[in-house]
Amino acid sequence: MKKIIATPEAPAAVGPYSQAVEAAGTLYISGQLPIDPATKTMPEGIRAQTEQSLKNIAAILEAAGYSKNDVVKSTVLLKDIADFGAMNEVYAGFYTENPPARVAYQVAALPMGALVEIETVAVK
Image: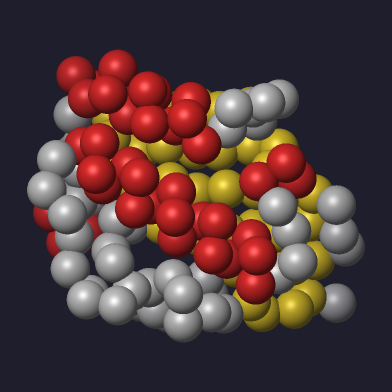
């Protein structure tokens, strides 16, 4: 059985999908754009956008009763792979111990002109 996870502390889905779905002890968090849920705007620059995407992930994890220590896999989508280093520095500050497995790709474009989007899987 699956459970839909939604919190006002992260931006609402911008399409026909859930913020996250929990099934069999695994939490699947949809790709998080760097949208501030309070202002519904995106900050400027890759560092600020990465930080906001990770804040959104943290809010969803908390709403579902998980922590960042439960995260086992992340997928990072970048508008420009040249932003990898700056994104990586912010990401490293979020996952300071036992970071999850991760992959990062450059994509042609991201919704709403974002520079980064991060999808996450967590397991209890």
